[in-house]
Structures are given as structure tokens and as C-alpha cells.
Length: 415
Image (tube, rainbow, N blue to C red; front, side, top):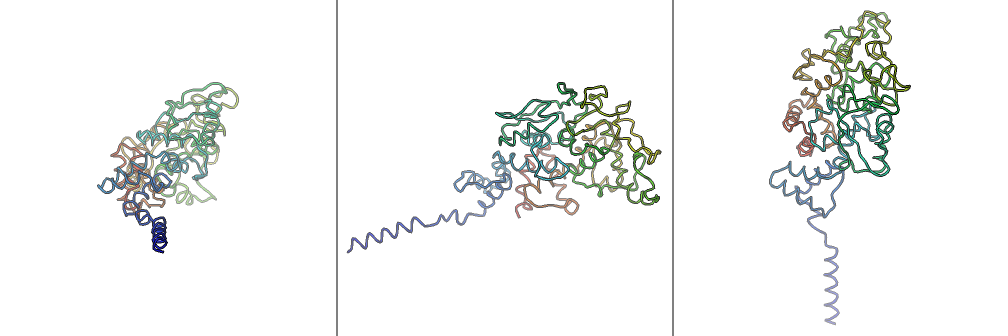
């Protein structure tokens, strides 16, 4: 009988040991919860219960080194393959949705983040990123310049973008089915096939200005409209007497077009026809079929001066010059321009002015905050805070990876 009782007692104790919960996992410390939250926000994935990364991050947090904790998370390829990719997808097209295929714009943004180069080159650089692998179509003209085949294959084959993407110097433009030419006015992702395809297709190239400001300055058109700025650059296709009312033009139409049309000349030689981007310096009117560009004798694409009879006294675009009409008091405070920002010629000069502004740095901070913290932050209502984050971004050498790591551990993000 004693043997039976003792056996039952041992079995009971054994059963209790088997079902006894792991107190450290059931009631994780505050630092462990913080570490897991930072990791999940930066990678879009959860850590396994037994992952050694948790302990490493907790140790970093315990000694007050939040940056080191975040850096442990960004070592995970999913930081690039999920988080950076999702942010870039939203900026790459007119729809501003993550339900967008992988493309050259997104690849370049992932690459610049991973390689920790100056993020201003996203608007000024002469490069692109591509991958490789079995089943990946990689012929320059048919698969990258006039279609999205290459990036579709990278996505379809679930290629690890963090490890696979390679930077290629020198953007190219297809001039025929078998020939290419160097891009004469490269400006990073602005002159990517995706961004041009979204905003230079048909229209009058005003959308390229609008969406550069929208995506990289976080300013919608209505917020930088200025009815008091000069209307000297407004095109001839804009009616000064809509519905026979000049007041409507002065109080409504003029405000947007003073600034937008001032910058529009930067894109005077660009077009997109549904296949590839075209520039009048290389896609000549005498070129092969489907690779020509419709221009006047000065190389200005026809759409820049279309509907010229609506208001013949308006501004005719004769070259690729542009002026910055967003310099009056309100816009000067909004954008905080730096360097030579009064105007210039071409797209690279335009991208340089935009990326050198303080607003660019602040916008990148806002974009990263939304992506990592999964909530919006209003720049206007949090101007001092966003300005501080923008300054930190600039102090890092405009490194996007460092910006992600800094934002992810902010108290405003972890709340």
C-alpha cells in the first residue's frame, strides 16, 4: 500500500511539472515586451519564443542602448523584404497602395536603405537596382526598360531582396528594340520607369511635380498653393477666365498653378507612352518606330504646349528651365529651402532642390513613423518634434536605415 501511495504521489508531481507554465514566457518582463515590439515593428514578423535575439535586445535595452537593440532587428532580411518594401510601394505609384507589384522604384529604395548611402540620391542619383537568379528575366531592354518583367520575376520567385539586389550605375533609356542610350538627365527614382509611368503618361507633366512634392515633401497640392505668387510661368492651356470669370482664376486656379507650372519645366523633355520612358535628347523624332518622342524643333515634348489657344498669352515652354515660386513667406517656412533653390534646368536640378530642403528630411521621418509605428503623425501639429527627427536623419548622413532604427525606439512610436 505504501508503495502504491508513493507511486501515485510521484506521478502527481510529475504531471504538475509537465503542465507547469514557463513563468518567464507567461509573464515576460517589460524590457522583453519592448524588445519584441521593436522587432515586430521593424521586421513585420514575430520572434520565436526561444530566439536568442530577444535576450540580446533586452541586454541592450537594459544598458540604455536602444539604438543597438533596433540594429539587432534590422539585421533580419525581413526589415528590407517587408518593411522598407511596403513603404516604398506606397510612394511608387499614383494609387499610393501597397497592392502594387515590386518595381524599379521600390528596388532602388530598398537598395539605398540597405547600402546606407545618402538618401538624397533617391532624387538625384544615376543608378538603379536589379536582382538575379534562376527564372529571372534580366534582358535590359525587354525586361527592365520597356516592361516590369524583371521585378515581377523577383517577386514571383520570392527572391531575398535584402541579399540579392545589386546596384547598377548609370540609368539607361531604350532608343530602339536593340539599342539603348545613357539617361541624359537622371534623377534617381524620379526618372525610374515606375514613377515616370505613373505620372508622365499623357497629361502635361504637372503630375510629376505634384507627386514629387506629395511623396517626398509630404505636402499635397492644396497646402502649397499660393495665389500671391507670380503667374508668369502658368501655361497657355490654363484658362484665365473660367466660365467667363477672371476672379475664379485668381482665387482658385492660380494658386496651384503658380508653383506647379513654375517647376514643370524640369520635365519639359520627358514622356512615357505605356512602355518605357523617353527623353528628347535620345529618343529623336527620326528614331525607330515606338521609340520616338513627339517634340518641337527645340526638343520640348508637344504635350507641354498643347491647347495653346486657350490663353495664347500664357507661358510657352521653350526649354527645360524652371523657377521656384514657392519662396514667399508661408512656403519658405513650409519647405525651408537651402542652397541654390531659385530655379534651374532639368530634372536632376529639380530633385536636388527638393532633397536639400529641410522638408524632405522631415517628410522621410513622417514616412518612416507611419510605416514602423503604424499610425500617422501630423507634421504641422508636431512641427518641433518632426524637425528634431529630420535633423537626426541629416546628422546620420541621410541614412534611411538609421532613421528607421531611431524612429522605432521613440516613445511616440512605442506608446
